[in-house]
Length: 333
Image (tube, rainbow, N blue to C red; front, side, top):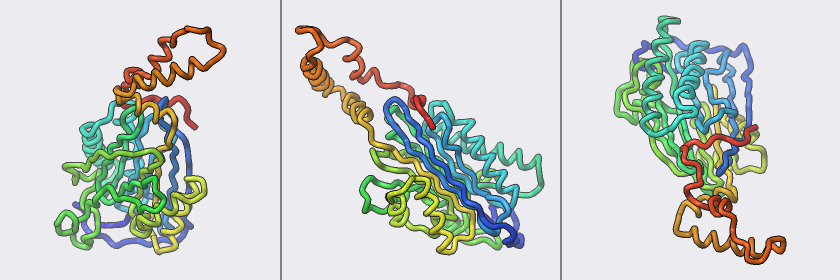
């Protein structure tokens, strides 16, 4: 992103078309005992940038924490800031109990640490806007989202005809009622990580149902692709990574000249997650035990009058569900 950052004087912008932009995409699956996430990301470098100033989480991480960051300030330093921010957020949140307080602390700590690391490297300014989501609970139906600046988070509902729902509000000068610096615009981000401009990161809790998606993206995408198009493309009959790449192609076709990134978390419906929801209600436990008893009683291989093994009853008990908010993955590819 090439904008005037807070606390930075306006400087002439340099345009470069020496290298063609490159787009990379990846996909993966995170499977836990009770839930499954389909993951995909696509990120494209602008033709006027020598390096992609956006950064994002690797999809094969051990915890359901995902980040998209958009470096500000130009060039290699902007790219370094976005990568450093993603790395520090994962170091603070992976394999830990995650709540709103820990996410807020991770962003504030990253703001100070990135600014200090920057000062050791250069006298120039640099920062990044960011969007983050973190799954909590065994079913991964409860998520925390956080953002600073104008990276966004959308939720795509299971219904194919609903537009993507914007869950964030851009931290722009216009939205915050502040005057932009000389050379800036009311639509520029007024809050960024890495230059001391963050005092209170935005953190919200959202629900993600079976078949729904969270979409994290930088402004190189969302300024050119609307909520209806996001929903339509992500519901297309193609791999999720191809759908993400298609969104970048549409943004380029509509005039996006910035780096662009989109990362999608698709919560897949699974029989085990439905069973876990029912069991967690407690009141229906007896019904489940009766149903299991009937199924076992119908098994001709079992001796007449045999009882339900205690371990089978325990498998249906709410207490048998993982207590850790982040259940460790059983399979990941």
